[in-house]
Length: 203
Image (cartoon, rainbow, N blue to C red):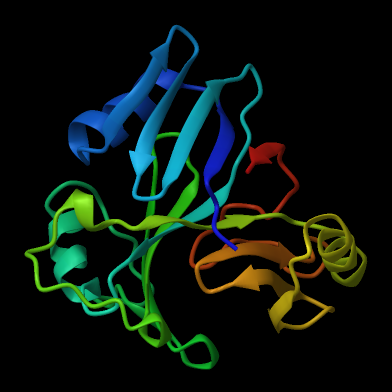
């Protein structure tokens, strides 16, 4: 699976555009009065102005050898969330992946992830152009198995890792739908942002 375009709803569109275009340096490929779209590797990420404050968790994939370098790069531009005092990187053993997290101006939980199994090392000095794609989007549900079965039926994508009780995934390492059960998994790691269904459009 690859996420080609992801559209999210955004309460404060101007602060979001300033952050992604001016602060982080993603290229604008479409810009209107109440929306904008940035290029993220093979993905397009679109934010659409909304009168409702939705909260999302989404993730960007970077080369498998660049997480520490990307962390320093990001800390020079915004606050990276502490997981423990003075610890910013989380290792997910069953995924063989390393991540760090930050909040965007609208309070969404964003993540950079390096997946070692993809073996997509880069020899370049890290820059925003090295972000490969939008890699994950949270899709909270009250029934993980039913949701994953529906995704398999409609999109021919399969359950990846996790469980059907509290947190599952559908897709593969290049593109994942995160399926937390919002009745048992109430917060997005490593924050106090509530896990709750929010509308999005994905290709």
